[in-house]
Image 1 (tube, rainbow, N blue to C red):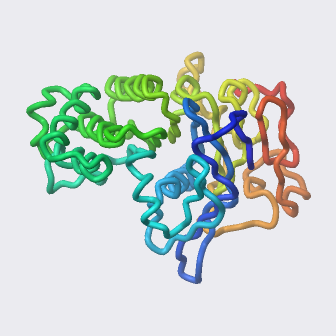
Image 2 (image 1 turned 60 degrees about the vertical axis):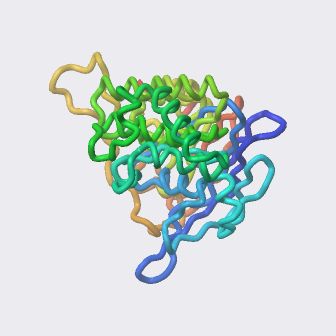
Length: 334
């Protein structure tokens, strides 16, 4: 699915991205031809159930696919193609131009080095500053992300910090070199509601201040409704719907998108009433059907859905849906 942003020079262009991983009987394709683009200041949310391909897509954009994984398709950064396996080109971009906040900071941070040193390392590598300058800039960023007692924390180790504090450190590391794109993969996992809001507000503030592009990955649909301009809904490694966030929330066209939105808790829902659910499960990695991947779970599926893979249906206002029988535009996710 390809929905291009109407700008002359996008920062990031992803064209027919395919990712395969090693399986017991050979390669298993887990992302199937995903395409999108982003310009400076754009914000894109990736949503979908676990196992739909969101995080591995983000890792591909950083050149950090796991061992044994392979990428096809093009990733272009500022017009330059980033070739799979060209570690020299990726090293120039990763950290300096594209920063990432990983889902679990305790596993992303090095437990053997103090946080000031970890932030300073990227500054020394990409910006060529000396150790004293790197330490001073690391402190400035820890203060910028509002880490309490930042000067005292420079020499702290990850295990000495709370979850919210570690997430702020990850954000400081991701932003230290002034990237033009920030990828935040479930940046508020395991944080309480107050800290979650503080971290998200901080990301939003810094993205606006630095005029960065943002890719936000989350299961929290309420968060997406207020934090991103565009949405890409992923299912079984495919982008099944994509478009302006407000439009998708008001009028989802793909039955999967509608099911996700319908499953949200509502403030007016009677006490004790069960939440709506989507029956079935996400297909396992490499599990392919000849037709639509969502057909086994879809109440609207017909015989042609089982046999014919859907193609993109491009709608007005940059909205696109991959479905043979999309919902009517008036169908709201209430």
